[in-house]
Figure 1: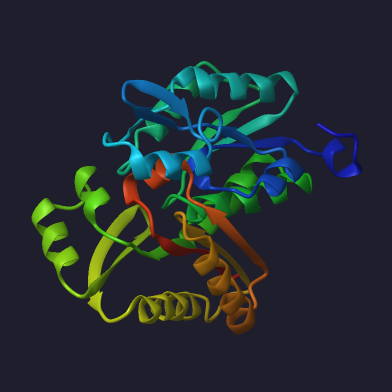
Figure 2 (figure 1 turned 180 degrees about the vertical axis):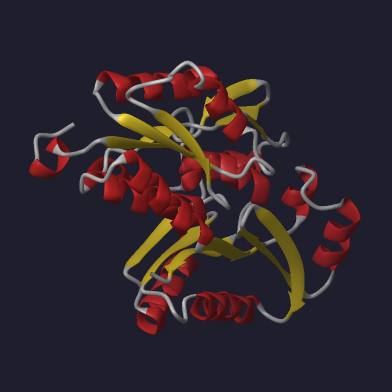
Length: 292
């Protein structure tokens, strides 16, 4: 912890996992603890962003005949971060992706049982993954940096989670089918048609659909969705996510900047564990549209 005036009043540390896809400069500025999720490839466990980078992941995915799987993080990884917060005299708020799509909440709660406090450790679920999970963490961390107490930070995260979601276009439904997220027959039919697969995640639910038309038209539909969701927002954060589609994502970010003028705008790659579920050619918009 640095010796700035802001940090001297900090009472809470935010802890989350790498699926949040948070920008590195925000992690550093607000002292957010990131627990790496785990990718399993040919029997080898690789910590997301530690043992394998985004660039190395996409290169290997293009050539390795064996596809990776994902695994829940060990409770000891969370326990270590809870202990660091306790040793610094800080309460800890651990934000996890929804229980219905991941075991991370159960793992974090298991680790938290040994930390009765004070300082206190609490685990809270958001409603999605990627920066739809990261924005609630970021806004909570900003509140913590300003000196907010645990109850206030927790409320900030909870409210932001309600206002966050992600919509994305995919190159194919193949990877989601391999992971059991959609039936194989649906994936084969969708990929055989001249259509673009969409997925969305909000309030703990994942939805899929396909739409006829070009990819450019599909990207316009993403912008339209966020514009509609943010119509009455007093704060809008947008993250343009990509899976090895860097140029396309930067062009989309410029459009978002011009048309929606968000308070925060980031371009971030899907981490390896997230990329394992969707495959290449994804472009998506994660957003937090807070109304008050």
